Image (cartoon, rainbow, N blue to C red):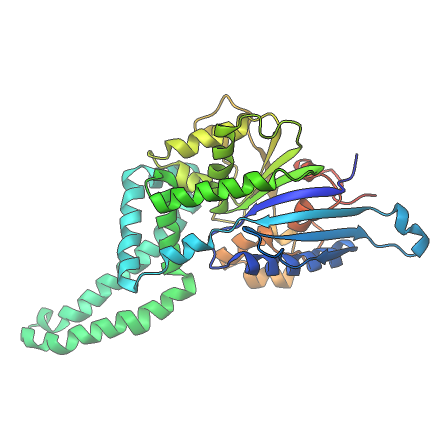
Length: 391
């Protein structure tokens, strides 16, 4: 198997309040962990001046015991482009608390009306619970707040007593519930569902213009010569990636001709958006990607991650049962971490969901740094028996 000497990586991160520079910092930390575990050397370069999206170079190489062996050791250079959507995250989180709550519940209603929730529970019931949780939690808090406000009246006191119970209820919501809810990132999840609706309906000019802009930037990055092109995406970033790559394929069906391309969706949330009845454009773009002969689609899923569609064939469920299906890669987080580390994070579902793109404690069948910067072609991750490092 020919090792990779030069690679171009387009990574679409998940819905997190991190810009491209912050994602690069996370990548550097994760790469150091991976290098220590697998025994290779890694150097993560600075952000390229003026790059948009943020790009940087990563060099990995075999550790050699004697200087004379350096010339025969493997070396891989990867250009990483972080196609983050922090601009959209900040826009969705910019309003006051009340406006964010109203927008979140509006998104919840829209997803229900468009059959999204029904699809979640049909294909991945745990994802359905993930969808409902922040809304049920907030609805319960609102009901409790209302009960505190009308408590004097409900027990027979004069309505005038609501002059003190209403402010007390408001204090409960602002100073007790909201800080408590931040443990579960409730308002952030509200914004996540608002973005899911926007990527499903494609009815927001600001989002659509941003996708067009990212498509132009990605098109430019693809002009760079490389042995391999890896399009990696995590969580909500997979829907962004599907739109961006789909836009390029619509305009240039032969854009990847002659290229080795791996589309790796990690903990993918494509169906979070694609199961909405209005998401016809997203589903069509999923089909374009699946039918592109140059693209090998790896769909990395995890049993203990409730925020993904475990063992669900994303291409078929998107309406393309006759198209080549994404290769499912089933991983276990506890194989990547020490027992103590896994025990510490296993009850935090958002933290478990992030592990796809974080560094390992142990050598495991999946490693994000090796997928995007290692010496072996990314396609080796499709075979559980394939070596992850040159032997």
